[in-house]
Length: 547
Image (cartoon, rainbow, N blue to C red; front, side, top):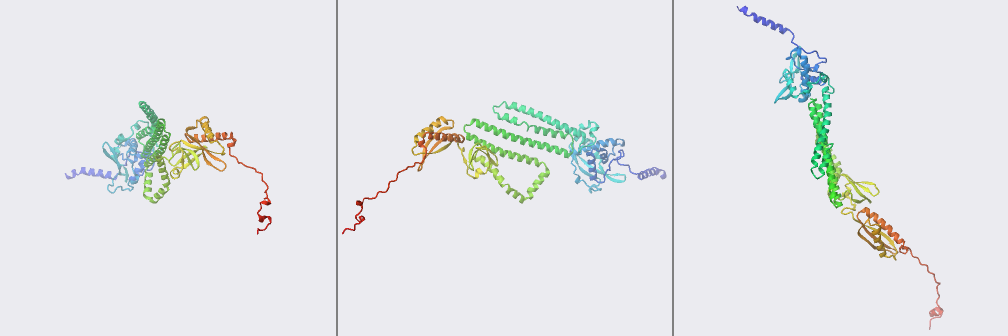
């Protein structure tokens, strides 16, 4: 009885022995042999091999890095290709794998020798672990993406993958160029062209709406500001559309990072561009408003100088801040800059000393705009040169000399050295014409002639404030006569002095006796007269002294 009951157990033992003696079933038996060698000895080799094959578009090789045994063998080839491609998109989009941190030993993590986790991906409020699993393949241990991970690829792709990619023909998924499939290159082209066209359209619509609103006001500043947005307003629209368009293409992380930084850079450039436009428009508007309403030309020049210097300061600050924001997005540059500032104390001191003159020049420009010893349009005398201040920057002043030359003068000169400003408080000036005349000159006649010259010949130059003739000095042979006249500005004064001098010389030539000349006298010399003998004293006549 006992012998008969043991037969089933003996049969099961025989079947188990036969199965144990047979070789283990091959991993992913439904896949064709890979065209390239597949290295799955370590978690690092598996992760690197899958990403390399997927990024070059070789999904026939990439599918061998997945555990597909849960799929029927006749479907493994088709599903393996699809799952490998989908997993590549999900990893590129949602998980940055740091290959340097992946285990490089065949045994894997000592804490759990069967699994090696690459990271987690969020899915509907939960986290899906992306793991590599150690399995047996032909009697050896290999690492592949675990079965639970592969089973979640479709759900992850539905949440984070490109829907449009499933509708395109298969030719758009064959191979890669620079890590991008043909459909992604096509999407980039459509995104760039579409973003540019939509940016131009949105800019025009925004400007048209802004101009319509600006017409409701009585000031022209808002109209000019809206017009200043033409150009800078196009860049933020393009940047936003570019970032949004590339987000749907599931680009590899380095490529997506590149486009994100390009979009960020365009936003910074557009803001800086608009600020520069705003400074130019606002300064021009205020200057024109003051020039039109103010009758004081000195105040207009003062305001013009202040806006010129302050605009230069704000423009320089805008360039510096924009450049800093552009560089801060690059990790390498930011780290290098921080390291240099933290470790190079002596170098920082040397740079600070070297930049001392530049900083002092910058501060001098700001001080000049506040104190205003010289302003744009002032007529000054610098180093014996007379000219008009044409331009004031943060570092130098451009002086237009009377003969159309340009003198470039460091801005610190006007704070450290004396100079003449002929139009500081008022451009009105007095000018003297000095003549040498004879003592016989009728000074009253010269005064009358000067008045006639000013009222008839030079009435457009003389401002009728002052005219006088005085004897400035009496020398041994001539008189020094000074004719003093006034004019509204230095340019008119120069011409007025020249004309007065010319007319007075012509007037004196009509009276030759008033011109200075040298007098000479010729006298006839008489022979000496001898005294009469009677006039001589007694002792002179040869007589001795009287007794």
